[in-house]
Amino acid sequence: MHGVRVSYLIEYPEYIPQLAQWLFEQWNRILGEQGPEARIKKLKAHMNRDQLPIAWIAHANGQLLGTAALRVHDLEAREDLTPWLGRSICWLGFSSSGHWHRTLCYR
Image 1 (cartoon, one colour):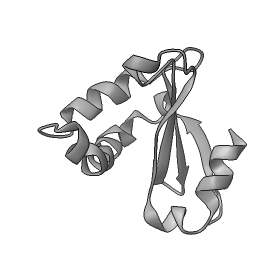
Image 2 (cartoon, helix red, strand yellow):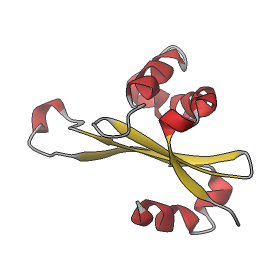
Image 3 (cartoon, rainbow, N blue to C red):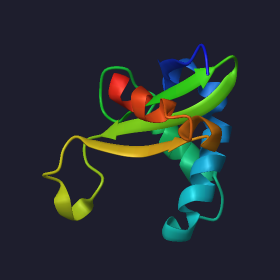
């Protein structure tokens, strides 16, 4: 896939509803949320450039490909594990191409 860019989520807030839906579908069985609204709230908290939590998106030609986030910590019992790479998810077509691994390593 050509033209893949990695950007801060804060630069592309229009992708938040789609990301929230993807994350809800992926994690709802574990988290037991009623809908993607909770994910939207968390994504908005990651709209930073120079402080944690922070999120990036991968996109190309107007298509969202994935997201990854860096947090202070993610496990209440293990706050010593910091910073924490959390919420890495990508569109399956992008994942199977091998681009996602290279994108995560790029950042």
